[in-house]
Each structure stands twice: as structure tokens, then as C-alpha cells.
Length: 218
Length: 282
Image (cartoon, rainbow over all chains, first blue to last red; front, top):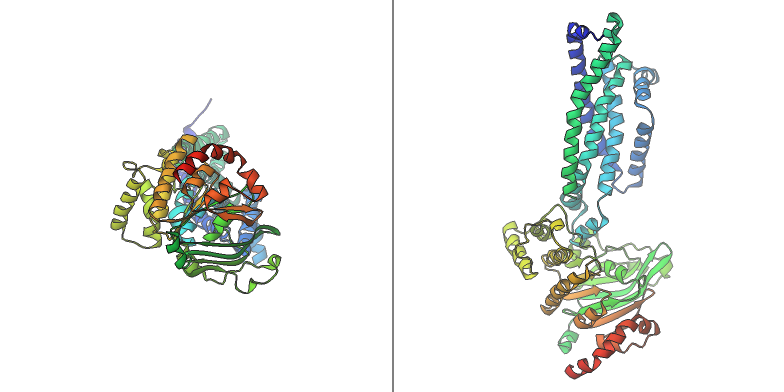
């Protein structure tokens, strides 16, 4: 019933698609972490203005579906701004900005989950805000943040498939292309599913391990 | 000893200290002088403001009015607020933050929940203050920290993490951590309240040892027996004011204040049984 020869025949397309998926995963996770760190720290400064800006950012990007964000950036934003935007920038920006909102929340929650007694103890020793963050709060918070950060990154890799809707040639886009001229959707989409399992199951297991490690430092 | 002390300036001076949470007054004009080497115990019902007062001394709680001086230096001075209606206090401190941190590091604090740094060993916990805040030489600090931990009876536990230690051991590490800064005064916030009964004794012993070494101490505790033993002075706080202040014998055994009488009631019964013995030795 299954005829996987279509996969082998069109292997170069799938391989390119896989590389595109990995490339976008890597750059959008990196950029998302960087923007998320800034947005998260803004909400921890105690400044009401910065906190509000951070809050608004998080709520906007957390509550609009990623597909809508991508379509908006690619098709609507150029009309608003009167400039053209490439697929690359639309996909990269959409994925990164979306991921940043979630990373920012993980960072904020991680820092805020540290017992206020830790702040009391550092303050009583005469530490400054910067010393307290660097020596006591962030080392503890980062260990607690490892599991949710890993989890969010796995979701991020899966989310890259939404870029196929703005014609970025990722693995899903290549699959639908192959399926359109081979009339073999069953094999093609099954293969895409298996590819993600092969890619992400090891990462999921790794994040479980990290979770155990971060529990021991509680 | 007391004649000696009276000639000196008080180490810790608190004047007209007010603290409000919102519009709710917690401290309503506290005046308190603590001499060098003196051990002062604060008692009172929950909500009387004793922990708030302790946390105001190193500004973990920001007062809303008054003045606090440690070893002749202001750590808190509300300035122009003095003389204004207490509910109008802004709480602004005229002492710059840099000085606050410096003076703060001359006070040591021990908390009810220990608040050790869980990602550091016992030794690293004790070294953290001197090395990070005072920029002391790590090698020298390490030697000193080892000695402090040994004094606290923690030899062999130096490289353990807080989670590997019992509550009593953790609290003794916390006392060593506070002592490592060579504080002029040490503040204890219900240091034995979170401990299992069988672990209370070892922490009290460590504190008694510290008191005998001449450390100036302000202690909030519910352990009236311990207060009786360790205190030079016992202060009874009631509704944000000092209601009684005197030697433990007066305050705990011969209270005059009505609320204090009922507060020490249970302790009193035990103390009455002990009195013949105490009078015989005293």
C-alpha cells in the first residue's frame, strides 16, 4: 500500500526542506531568546513604564496565533509601511517575535519564583541590586528555567512549519509540493511526521533529563 | 559592666521610628537605644510589630518616619518629616543608597527560614558576603570561614549544600554567614521558630556563645525561657509601641503592664516554680 519510492526520488527537495526548517529553528530560537531576555528583564526592573511595555508586548504576541502574525507581517505589514519584505525576513521576524513573548514569560516567572528570603539575605549582607542578581538570583533562576526553555524551544521547532503558508520552502512546504505532482500525500506527509519524531523525541528526552537536574538544585 | 556601658554612646539609636503599611500604622514612634555588647530581646504578640522593628533596623522594611543610627552613622533619617503628623510621612530617606548598603553590611541578620543560598555550599555561603560585598581576599576569607563554621560545631559539613543539612545546622551556617561580615550588631528574627523542637537547643547554644563573646544582639523570639537566659534587657512591644522595657527579671517575672501579664502567663507558671532556685543563685 505504501510506496516510499517517492521520498527517495525526491530526496533533494526533502533534504533542502529539512535544512531550511533547522536553519529557521536555530535563528528564531536565538533571536527569540535575546529579545525575550530584554522583554523579561524590562518587567523586572521595577519601572512602571518598562513593565507595562513588556507586558503589552507579551500579551500581543502570546494571544495572536502565530499563523496570523506570519500572514500579517508578510502580506499586511508591507502595505502599512509602504515597503516590501522578503519571505526570509517575514518568517524570521514572525517566529522570533512570537517566541520572545514566551521566553520572556519563562524568564520573568523564573526570577519571580525565587523565594523573597533570598533577596532579604542578600540585602542584609549589603549587596547591591546588580550583585544580588548576578551572584544569587539569576544562577538559581536559570537552573529552574532550563526545562521550560527546552520545552518552548521544541514547540518553536514545530512552529516553523507554519512558514510554509508564506511560501518559505521548509520541509512541510516541500512535502506539499512533492505531494502535488506525485499524488502520494499518504507517504509524503507520513514521512514528514516521522522526520519530526526523529528530530524531536531525543530533544524531549534530553529536556526530561535536564528537568531532573534542575530539581536537584532546588 | 553596666556602669562601663553607660559612659559610652549607644551603638544603635532608634528615634521616633514610624512604619505604616498603607494607612495601617505598624510602628508608632519607637525610641530605643542599644549599648555595645548588650543583648536585647523583643517580645510581643503576633502583629505587635517586633519583626517589623527588627527589619527596619537594616532597612529591609522601609520606615515611614524617624531616625536610625548605627555606630554614630545615620542609616535612616526621614529629615524634614520629623515633627509632621505621622500619617503624612513620606518615608523618604535622606541617607544616600551607597551609604545605606555600607552601613547595612555592618549589621548581620539571621532569619526564621535561614535563607541560605541553595546553590552554594556552607563554606561558600559564609564567604559570599566578605568576598562579594567587602571584596576581601578569598584565601583569607576561606580560612576565617572555616574557623567560624568550626566554632558553630559544623566541622566536616563545610562542603555540603544547605539541602544536605538539618534545620539546626542550616541556621548555624546562617549565623556564621552573618558573623563573617564582622557586624557591629546582629539581628535575629525568630531564629528557632522554624526548627524541630530537638534542634532548637543547638541554635540557642550557638547564640549564647556569640552573646558571651560580647556581640551586640537584638533578638525577636517566642522562647521566653531563652529570652530570660540570654537577655540583658527584654522589651515588650504592644500595638507598635514599647510597652515595657527592663531586665528580664522585671519584665518576665514581675510584669506591670496588663497585656504583658497575660502574654507571659504561661511562662510565668513555669517561672514561679523556678523562682526559689533563681533567687537562691541570684
